[in-house]
Each structure stands twice: as C-alpha cells, then as structure tokens.
Image (tube, rainbow, N blue to C red):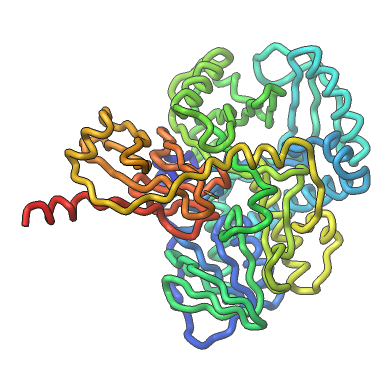
Length: 515
Ligand code: FES
C-alpha cells in the first residue's frame, strides 16, 4: 500500500491499497458530514457518525492509511507520552482522571469494533512496563506513580521487566494493548461503506468555502456538507494550531530474533530522551520485535540514516538479532500543553471541526477524537469539550520560541529554467544525494536519484515560506516549521501545505534547447 515515504512499514507489507465500493460523488447531494482524511481518526469518526444516523462522506487525498496510521507502531495506551505528573501540572487532577477514563474507553472501543467487524487485527491486551536507568529518572518515576494513581491508573513497582536491560526502578501497569493498524483500518472502512457511507480515495480537497452548507472543491468535484471534520493529522491552510503543534519524526525497526525467549509479552518503555519502546507483533505466524525511538523535530537531523544506525546498534546491544526485516519512520505532532486538540477549528465557522496533536499516541487518541467528535457533531456537547478544546490557551514556556526558531523564511524563488548540466555543475551530487544550493541569490533544492537523474524544486514551502530540508531515509523534502512534506519532485505528501513545491522541469528545457 502507498504511504508518505519511501520505506515500508510492517503494516504495509503485502497489503494492497484499500478497494472501496467506488461510489462516485453524487452531484447536488448535501451530506451531513464531510470527513477529510482516511487515517484511524477519519475512518473511526466517519463510522461512528454514520452509525449515529449522519450521512457521511470521507475524502482521502491518497489511499486510506497513507499517513501516520500506516507508519505507527500501534501501541494502545492509557499511559500516554504526556505522563500524568505533567498533565496534573499543566491541568489538574480531574482532567488527568478524564484522560485516563477516555483512553481506557477508546481501547475498549477498538476491541469491540475489531470483534464486531472481524478485523483479524490481532488485538491483544497486555501490561505496560516503564523503567528508570539513573537517579534522575528514578526520582521522576516516583512522581509518575503518584500522579498516575491520582488519575485512576492501576500501577505498581516491580523488580522485573520483560527485556534484558539493566534498570534502577521499574513500574508495571495493566490494560494496555496492541493491534495491527491497517487491517483494523480496512475493516472499519468496509463497515463504514456497508453502513451507507461514501469513501472517496485519491480525492484531494483544494479549498473550503464556509457557510451553512459548506462548499468543498476537490479533485473529484465539489462536495457539499453541513459539517466538516479535518482528520488530516494537522489541518491544512494557516491556522492558530500550526503555532501550537510541533512536528516530530520517530524511527522504527521490526526485527526477528534468534532467541525466542527474548520477545517481550508486554509493551515496554525506557525513560531516555528521546525514549525507546519495545513490543512483539505476530503476523500470520511470523514473530517480530518492534523497537522504536531516536525521535527528533522534523527536518532537524542532517542525515536521518544516523537515526536508523543508532536504533540498530541499540537493539543489537540488548537482543540477539537475526534479521532487520523492516525499517520505517513516521511523523507526529506535539501540542504546547501535552493534550490533543479535538473540537471546533479556531478561526473557522462553527460547523468546521479538527482533531490533531496526538504525540506518539495516535491510535489511542485518534479513537478518543472519534468518540468526542461523534458526541459534538450529533449533540453539540461532550464531557470532553473544554478539556480538548482547540481554542484553549495553555501557554507553556519555551514553546513559542521553538516555533519562531524554526521559521527560517527564505526569499522568493525567481522562476528560471535550468538544464541537467547547469544543475550538475551547481551541486556536485553523488547518486542518491540531495542538497540545497544558492544560485544568483535564490535557492534550489536538488536530489540526484539512484539512476543519476536530477530532480530540482524550489525549496520554499508553499504553506508559510519556510525552507524545506532533505530527509534521506524517506526521500522527501520536509518542512521544519509545521511539518509539511513533499516528494523529491515536490509533490505534496502531508500538509498543512495545500500545494506542491514549485518544480523545475528540466526535461522541458532540454527539449526547448534542442529546437
Ligand atoms: Fe508551514 Fe512549511 S509547513 S511553512
């Protein structure tokens, strides 16, 4: 199946793109809800709304699961990346209890939906382990225990963890879970269509005209809807939320082991910064250890191959690795205060909604978003409306400066034609290498592919004009400001940008030269 990068995740191996019922967009029809985006958030939201009696349509710009749902590590947690000590500091005890409750509800819903729709997604409830490896971490783990218990999480100290890594202090907590995300997604999409919903793939939303009936021009015609939900990981266009969400990349290996006893039957996390996470996944009789980590802010690592190398040496240090079967990376967004933004899109009319900022808990919080959005769109109310309100103001020191620091806004590109030889002289590139070069006061982003062909684009991100940087593992141009990503030819992979990088079409020039 297609995804937003060149690597292949464990969840995409031998899985074709989802085949929808191929219902065409009905011209003149007014849908109750348009959901933009076909990841776990969009598909679960659409399914719940359709079953609540709304007439829904999903518009996915590529194929469903193209984005982070295809690149997740599919942990299901009540213990989130933002721990309960931080949540109680940034919010209060009651809010932390609400987060523990709704994440538990989301995991239970995934179990029930997987059963109801026979998703064959290997849903499995497991304990989670968190371990500290130095004094500082050990002190912090005590704060996590105290705060987690206040939030209502069942958590205990333990002298044993299920992987062979030395530690000072460790915790165990029950009722976490794991599953196969793309099998689950496909089962829900199928259920949505069977319930009468319309699913359009390769349907790119190009604009939104607000009103009681929202007009949404797309690559397949104009969709009309009374309500719109942006389930696109981060909403498109320029919005307040882009200054309150920071994009990060995370790296994953799925490896086979020589020693069967080393596969943990649990979800395991260390406390390093960035932290590592470990779990086991069985797929059709084959067993993998999934190890992730080496996270960094998007477009802030000069050579992303280093992240995979570090991760590989980490896993080989503690496990008897037979084979690195899969390696991939993926994107997530962190918010200023550690909780997601789910609800009315700030600055938009009352009938436009959004869900974003799930940190590394996208499968759990994407499902939480679906529960909350279903309540908001069908009744106008939800017990979680204020807690997750995208318009809430929770300034956290350091975040504003982070966003400013990234805003390396570059000069406009003076449109100009180049030949392969011009470009070859500008940058002495090896095969499979990329660079941004300066030429007559402008910048050109160039990539020489494995066949020696140069791909050149204007590095100015069309979202807010920051300069993109090369991601050598996913072969993409990534924007450090708000996380838009583009292929080597400038094609938009993930928003918030709505359009491609400007492409410098070298072939046409060469034809013109020959005339
Ligand atoms: Fe905002 Fe690139 S994503 S400037």
